[in-house]
Image (cartoon, rainbow, N blue to C red):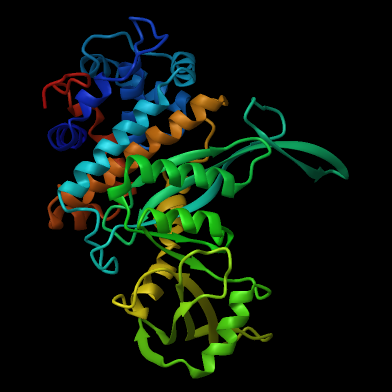
Length: 415
């Protein structure tokens, strides 16, 4: 199975060629960057939890690993750590871009049920690691209470741009939040880079309420990109404007799964001075029955009502129902993104506490996540995919096939 996945990655994405093109800056001939990165990437495809666990796997299957690495000496955990500290992060980001570009050319990314043929990307912040003992030059600091005392906690946060509502939730870009910075500052750097380098990969950006910033949205307007952002703050002028117009707006009622949804569409709101172009407001009221226990422990059904408001620059040719789907689609970055990456792919594990190593490892995990996701959906037969069940089980199958790939050459440039 591992041989098949690696062969698929080489045939479709030229993965071995891309890895061989890493800069190899400050690396020795014995342990060069393509070797270190390839070993780490295979480890992340197997979803191995740490560098020491990866080295144990290498020692247990030493003959196979040596053949995979074309006779090169196998690295230790400390060698892998030092290599991560010198990794070429920009090249790793470039490799990720090549893979997602190929997926787009192969008509894979925007084939989700609710994407309406558009490339939809969510941008959100995520905290990866925290420690009260180890820190580096790029750690952020906060005060925590422990045992009645105040202690300094060091942590790292990143802004992630990930495709949502498509078949493969590929990660497009990652930007670290530096010491003393806010999430908005880092997100503007990330979005500006995506617009400059990978503009065709995104048609619509979806945001949480934190990103309701006129400078950011004006930048997207000027780049001819659509955006959908949640509106939560009741003190905002636009919130009051929606309250004033809502009684006169036409409503649409439909059933979405187990929810009864009522939508109101408010076109061309212009009450926000900081925004240069008119925008729309979409309001939803969603009702569903949920089970709840009373004091005696008996379950009974109650009606749960939730209210949502979104602002968007998408024109009237896109119905309010699409805005509703895109607005809720932002949670895809949590459900199919951070949730799986953290719980199954060890996205929050500090493989080596060093600024460059942490970011490089996030990119390697992201590469393994995208490759395994694409392989699971596009290469496996539906019957076999049904037997395996989940991508976590796929990783277990890869581990079982570890000793059966004696003819797989990891660094071979041939597909």
